[in-house]
Amino acid sequence: MIQWNPEPDIFSYGPVHVRWYGLMFLLGFSIGYAIIRWMCRIENKSFERLEGLLVYVMAGTMIGARLGHVLFYAPEYYLSHPVEILKIWEGGLASHGGTLGVMIGIWLYSRRYPEFSTIWMLDRLSIPTALVAAFIRIGNLMNSEILGRPSDLPWAFVFLRQDNIPRHPGQLYESLAYFALFLFTMTLYRRNPFRPDGFFFGIMLIWIFLARIFLEYFKENQEAFEQGMWMNMGQILSVPFVLFGVYLLVRALRAKNKNVNSLPNTAAN
Image 1: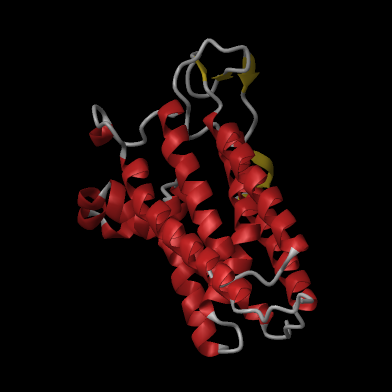
Image 2: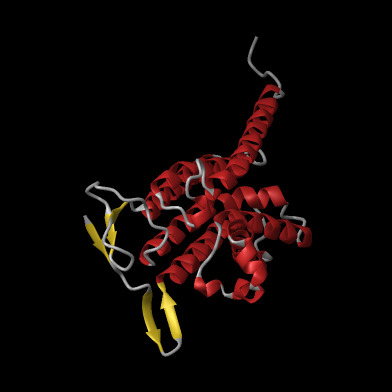
């Protein structure tokens, strides 16, 4: 068993606390921004206006993730205590809301800069998004939060700050799943950056939210009302994203086949 009890703070100075979670969040977004700039160079896109993209994406992520938690997991409490909605530092972020927030942020960005279409941005952003998600789950691990269910496996973690029960390291399971997605989609992109619209975004939605549905069975429920449910709230909310991803991927593959079939036959007679 792995005894786990790291400090959430990397260091602190008076009221200033630099935490592992925040570092992982910032690191993921910074690397993601660098990847998008690299993609623009490959595809001969101007990246002079990308400076504002990070603001749209981060704002969409944080606002969407917070409102997702408020609306999906504890609406009664937050509607009765609206000031608590602003206290993001106390925890309470939902990845499903964050995903919707990013989509809305990209749509707003594309309206301001039409040369970057919404689907083009979502396709490209889906690749570093997987890396960001992997880093964030590492941050959850450093915070000893989002606990797994009890386990007797040799790689089980004992989160000493929470209890002395060996548990599945669900944070690591998710982080590895998302990192594998990043490597897979990055490999596909390097082989051919010019895929049909929705190809990479569809893969990302299917992979991440199928993994979420499966890996939730290794994690403790986050809210009391989820006890006894066949599928918890995270799994239920994942289903529409998977279905939308399937739709986008099928449409992209059909568009690819249509383009291939429409090419003139240049073979010698």
